[in-house]
Image (cartoon, rainbow, N blue to C red; front, side, top):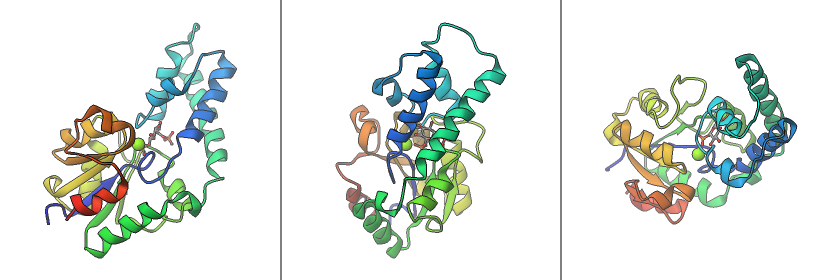
Length: 212
Ligand code: B16
Ligand code: MG
């Protein structure tokens, strides 16, 4: 088999939390009087929480101390976590679950490689709390995508060489991170339009053919 492991990004691949990120950042932006829309929100895909805040503050007239920035990020995250409580196993699509089960039945190792510090909570909400063989997330990295660290760690946790791992991503920075880590990638959603991945997918089930 060409790949012994598949490392999945979480937000935008396994499930969709964009609307909750948007709502929570919008509430903060409104409070600070900063313009914020879906296009700016799109730039936050795969980017860490503090880097996301810096992108939002590009349109801020004043200046914030580091302490104030940390408080803003905490405030956004508190609201985001409240919103995440609405998520349930119904937010896991049948095609995602079926594809994961098919890959597992072929003895492919399955891992998460997410920038989010809330990854384990989200996985629990959608009923995949104990599902993956390894989870590499925002809590075990110091450099975020496009740095390959999150995927390199996932491969290490699995004990599989990078050349035998396939990364599935919806963010441009995530595809770049996979390449920087010496891994092939499969793009879905927003990442498809850049045509920089090893494979561009139409649907999640395409993975069943890619990992043949
Ligand atoms: P948190 P992913 C990323 O998750 C999101 O795409 C990105 O929008 C978010 O800022 C980042 O996680 C950090 O999330 O604030 O929960 O730590 O796509 O890498 O799974
Ligand atoms: Mg993503």
